[in-house]
Picture 1 (cartoon, one colour):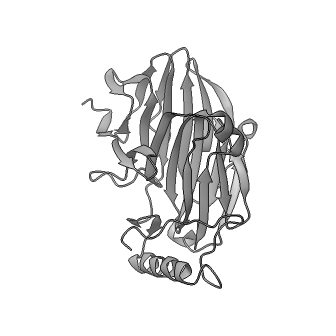
Picture 2 (tube, helix red, strand yellow):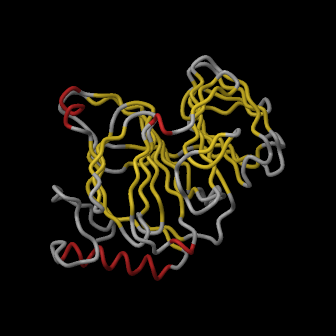
Picture 3 (cartoon, rainbow, N blue to C red):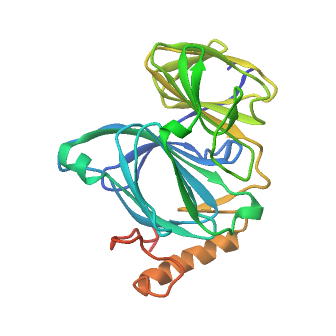
Length: 300
């Protein structure tokens, strides 16, 4: 381990149901968060044959924002604030759960008919305590609205926050740093020590070296504070740079719920159970329009 890397995290395979598997990086027992990032999943690349697809049934969230970013393929998103949109590579779906939202993620019908290759990243970022109970919202940021520039031979895209003099239009009430790197022809660049208070580099494809240390695909390097590092990426590599300001307090995470206070999670669990029992009639949590399925609490 070099002085530039504080911790190296190897992703672990998790089964989410229906044969859909992800490589989970955060939370990790030695490192729960990096900036506001409390959850980091890497899915694919997976090839769906015609007639097959991904079906993540409606489920609830509180206290966080989900961020979906694709390298390949398409995902249809529906939620209880009325969103019904397809996300494609280079765009960002930014869903703020706040005090409560329900959403589903499925393969769009055209891609289900034709088949597709799906590859992407989904992260959760914790909302600061001042915003944990805000009204839910959803914003889709098309690819062309996100700053894109050359970074040492790679194509860099600022998904949230500020990086190398470029600012994302994504609004988030906490210091955040999130950049996608596509090194088709390889790349070399430096990550300055002041890019963010907490910084991590995840290798989603290919291979990278950080100050000479090899980082393989599926690994996240947590960078040491105060260290400026040299990154070298091999051709056909995908990197995700994630971090930001250290969070205002530790966060509890239970199933799809994130909160600074465990009582908020206990209430959300009870309310999801009650919503199911009431057929989602007059309850806190509803189903997105056109949906009838749902994911029950995992221990029910």
